[in-house]
Length: 535
Ligand SMILES: Cc1cc2nc3c(=O)[nH]c(=O)nc-3n(C[C@H](O)[C@H](O)[C@H](O)COP(=O)(O)OP(=O)(O)OC[C@H]3O[C@@H](n4cnc5c(N)ncnc54)[C@H](O)[C@@H]3O)c2cc1C
Image (cartoon, rainbow, N blue to C red):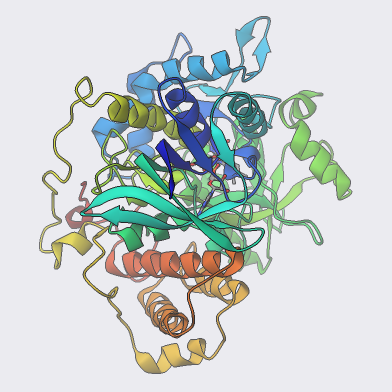
């Protein structure tokens, strides 16, 4: 008989751990995580977590910055919750023992791109995520939470549009076991492994989006993938993030010809939102015929880099680069998934008892582009609300899910036009010219070929032709996969999940015939009011 828990939480990044810790006093909690407990995007977060706690700051200013970065698609209600509840959730993290950096007893706040105030808390300089992950996992290990490592959620058990449990694959011996639960929380993180160049670790394979989609959950805003402008580009060095905070501290960008270029692209220069900086870099690399630009922090006050960026400094030094004396070669990399499993402001999906929290969820707080350091914050804000709502629905009432959806003017199929994918009705649409796609489809499906295709055709700068070619290749690969036996091990399950998610990203990008936030199409370069549709 299947073991039963009050909560099954899939994932052990900040969202999963924090949700489990919030639920543990009143319930039996199982965490399933497909690697070891601390393998998660969270561990790599550098810059920090945003909260309006400075005397010259306010939730309203934080909200305004979030709305501006989100380029017209932010769900204002959810973003207001994010900004307003931030200080309380930071206090929770402090209570759990997260050692945020301070000066003379006061929390040290830094500033990042597109924030109008200093409001970023950090730990260990640029090791915020590692401190959070290690602190929370340590508390979880010493509590009565059941933790199963190397347990990959392979299928959601859903009956009568109600989540009842999961099938988990033991990734060490490829056996499966069923678990049932009263509440199922997806906290599986993002999809960075879809792309050849990515800041995300190997666990970021979009499992939650694929699991949710197959089970009938609505998926939203998947065309909006954030590419971080500055990842280290050094021969022989794996991709490594050069934190946004480096520009916040005064770092400047130069092209391969030694010219500072950001002021020519945006009045905010180096502090412009990530999508603008990433596209400016792509354009400068093309103009100068180089595969990189340079980030310069050599003018920071003496000792400042060592205090603020010790991890980055050490990493670069290992590859012979002294960031206090030399410019850092960088180029953009896939970084964050703005879309995901669609939830309301309590983390509920359209399937009863199925919740999503963290990067896998689409609460709408990021809209078309995430404001730096809002993602760690989003995880704890909505994980807390998931637990509040599920433990006590009477005290936390909410309108039935699936309220009015505002449609863009003159758009075709309403569900798709809003960027919401409602599965269960058969295949994803396919658009394009079969002849061209066949050329691509001749390449056999592998993780590397999928990542290459997504990077080339569904990357920072897109166009209809490339997207259509990608859509057809992905459809063919998926139909080939459909004729082979279902995955029975972790790598093949992850590839199947990435392939399905790659299709959703590509179809969403094809449908959105405009440019907005992180989604930029050369054939539709303008932002159009008719596409400004919020849930
Ligand atoms: C290099 C880097 C720097 C960043 N810097 C910042 C920053 O400074 N500030 C900020 O706000 N954000 C930052 N981010 C983004 C932020 O770290 C993530 O959005 C956030 O940590 C996501 O947390 P999460 O708990 O939702 O997912 P994750 O931390 O990714 O955790 C997901 C968990 O789910 C598990 N999992 C996945 N699929 C399955 C499955 N099928 N079965 C079982 N387990 C599964 C994984 O193993 C993992 O444990 C950064 C991201 C990266 C990669």
